[in-house]
Image (cartoon, rainbow, N blue to C red; front, side):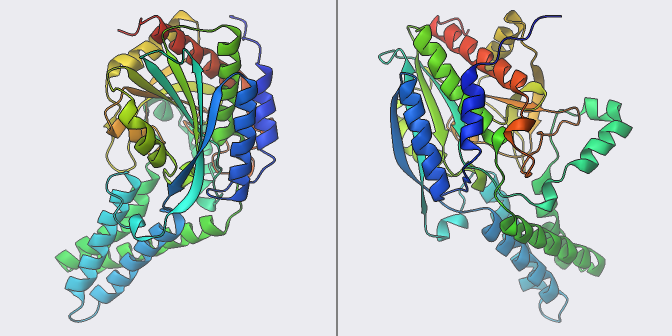
Length: 399
């Protein structure tokens, strides 16, 4: 058996330090974490800026309002003369939800007032190089909620391990949110009262789930996503100790990711015009402290979208093989990460993630997401793989 590489001391340091801070999107704690991270990256030899950013809160309250509107539309459709208006209300709610969580136009959330957050942007490697590798993490943390309890998924894996092994796509939770409004719209259109009742119940349950999440505490977020933030710091130290030429490395930690993408939009607005799509690669780092390291090929809360340019994902997999690092390919996520935004802009993109035997992110959005429950061996593998990818790109060995 191949010996495990030693754990870089910065990994535990960053996770344990920042997990003590409550870091809800747009909160003072999130800003304090960004300031601490900025200073830590400066110590690691980076040029660093904490960039002001904005985000629209498009998660619990807005989505809950839309599902509630769909439920009310279903009740209206039960009344004489209310079928058309009720059905249209539910249909519009479904479209607005799908638009929002898919990171397309985001019509509904943009009716709200933008809120402040911040992105930490550090520069390492060869500052004057034409080629750029951007590593994406996020330093905010999510609300908990009963919907994130993974005990049933873990139990089913114990009962049906062969079935779970066949699936390479995560559970489509957003489909469940959409199911109620769609059922109301279809029930109204087809005059099916049973379908209407089903849609009303589903929409009401989705609304209750959003209320529960909003009322639940902020998790420590050690695995999601301080493990990735820690990799940024450790990689900066590695590149300071052993510099590379020919590649600029941007180490980016965005704020407000947990509202289904927030600060990444401000990063894109500021930096994408200067980042050539032919000479820039994005490597997302997301929840790296579960037992098994994996490579996401794409993501899509509603419709699955593979990342552009499979050659970059092939490079990541090839480098992992050359270094003897275990990496599962073929995985796709039914939630969204900040990597969605460069993906939509056409940049070669890949995301490193980790999961357990049940294909679940360990302690995802749970209060048990603490430093002592992080698998640092997997985080170390992600660090070594990220560095190896950077050095391959620096040597122009990506084709």
